[in-house]
Amino acid sequence: MRHDALALELMTTDAAILHGPTFSAVLQRRERILATVDQLLAIPEKDIDIWSVAMTLAQDAYPDLDKTKLNREFESFVSRAGALAKARDDPDFHVRALNTFIYKKWGIAYDTSDYMGRKLINRYPHGVLTTRKGSCANLATFYISVAQRLGFPVYAVAAPQHYFARYVDPRLFFQNIEPTGRGGYSPDAQYVRDMEISPLAIEKGTFLRTMTHQELVADMIADHAGHYAVELKDYPTAIAILDRALARDPRAADYWYFMGQIYKFWGFQEVMREVREIKFTRAFVFMQKALRMGKGKPLEEGYWKELQKKPAKRGPGV
Image (cartoon, rainbow, N blue to C red):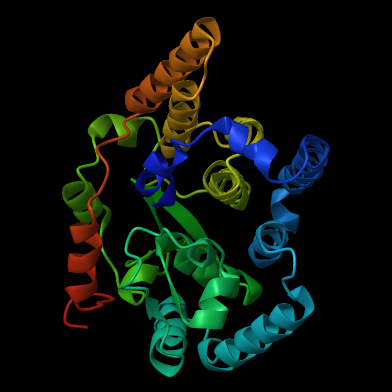
């Protein structure tokens, strides 16, 4: 995921902010996004619409984004998907029909030119709609957005530097859905083995738990902080965004680690020794916190390449 793959790009001077927009403009932008973040985090679980949240964040990254046009296209996509997927009241049929529409009829696929999710367009689900490609983050949020609009109980599941989806219904045995693998199924045990997820991470609920939509929104906001840290080099705003997001989803180990990375690379640019030491200390505290929660080693690009070679399966013999 991007917060690991692009961490080294944070090693540029914080003073770069002053060479772009004026400091006053930076403060105004900070106040604006933090107000937006507070509003999104205040939405009750039952009122959350994942697509709408994603579009709000995308509008901040792409000020000229035509939300009206994209919303119409998304609603049309959902309507056509629903015509196929809602033909039967059967969760297994729902998943298979969605997979058929998304991956076969529309040809949506993993962006093989961006396995590590470095492109900004691969951070927001509208990118899937416009390019028919994506990374693990926006393919998952796009899939969940469509399923949610159709009334299907599909929720996010966090894994190390990764998200997949889960259809929560006792009638469905193969509940896990891998959006980066054309909607195929992998049991939890396979994620544990392939991603080397520790028993500690399972015990603490860091990985493989079914997330609430509020927790997913918090993680989407935390990921959006990467835009401020990486593209805008606005570390204080990125940290403020992360601080709010992690208050809602304190089990998001990858983002605690990302917070530490920001402090670390910000500290490298600090001239004053006392301030630099404070930033390094905070970096250490947050990164150690993530490790105590069971965060493992970063996944390599080869993992995602191999994943694309595996056939998508919804169960034995399928």
